[in-house]
Image (cartoon, rainbow, N blue to C red; front, side):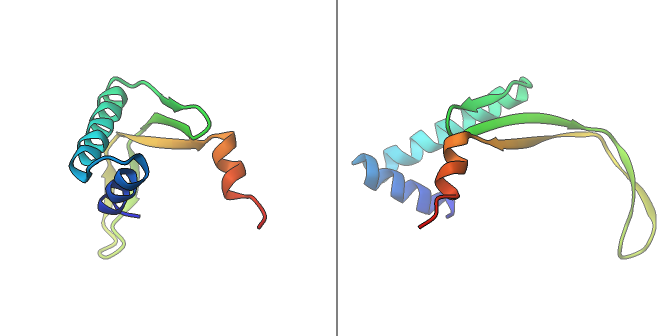
Length: 93
């Protein structure tokens, strides 16, 4: 599912216009981004937790040329699924 499909589904399920659903989704993305920039977790009970994760710089090799390079330190995001999400996707039909 891409962003446009998510907006369409959100609008249909909540009974709001697509433009409002788009604003809500964009606001959510902005809020999560701001919180993650402050190095804080985003916890959605039952769904999961988004956690900023610091990665150190590390040596690597360009696979095309074989030249050694250093991948700089950066922050990435880890997602830990919640109990209810795991149960929902693992239900036997």
